[in-house]
Length: 381
Image 1: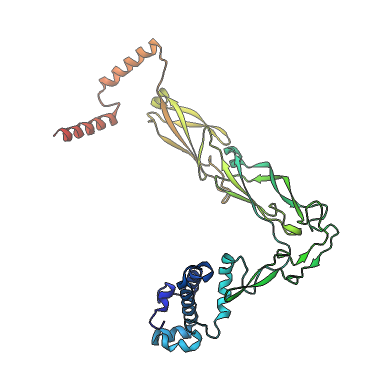
Image 2: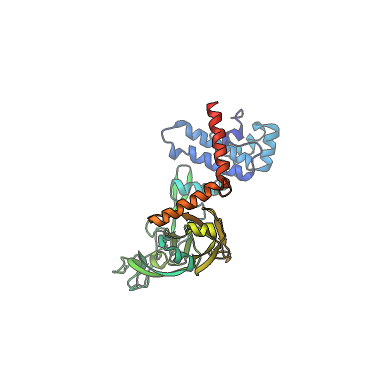
């Protein structure tokens, strides 16, 4: 053991902090705990080595001595050998292993197990789907969820006559101490399930649980401005706790349906607006839908398809900052369809005037065709 580096045993650097040493010890001890490695004889030895390494490195004085003089200088200071532990070791390890035993054995922290008394009910999580307008403006929704509610006949106590007696197994503590290998750990009392009391005459309606399943109607207020993925917490609206315990919370996850006109991104709204060919060429006014009704938008002459206009303050009012976003309207020039003979004649005459003007009316087209010609020349050259 004297030749084994203690930092290497825990898989840490020599510069590791006390918190990092503690975390590494918990991880290593969990990995090599004998109860988890019954078929691996070497696990127990590695488990003891990790304990020894932690005993030395957690103590600043021992750690400095080890760093300066090596393992032999601290081997007689309570570090113990591979087969045993030195003084002052188990108390601190017991505190650390409270977390580990919670995972391995289902017990509580050493000396700090769950106190006796009513347990809190479970939290409930549901999804609620709303329209975009409901999410933006806010809405009240009534929901019907199956959950555990407090039993009325026994007032949530679980006792028909309201009387209870102290559990004899745990003496009212709610925890019992059990031996697991070389350690003594605490677990929830199997008889009273951590309550510390036993019901002699259980309620017939709830079977002594103090609660029963029921479909519960709730009114949920969705605040204005909520968005996809937001969560609303309703305190005390989850499952009732057993035997009069406090209720958990209800969490409502918001899902927003896709909209026919708008797309929301944060506090901004986006929409596509078709405009006719004449308006795009000559300019004019169009009516744009917003959350507060239609507004007029002035489209300048010679507007190109895909042009985006910004309408300030016509977006969503944030549920957090209460600032209001903007509405972005992108216009798309619509090509006329179902033309009459007269309309076609007019367009042919118009097209001829465009052609006669050269590139005056289509400045982007000349540049694009010049780039195409240059590309083809390079390809063929």
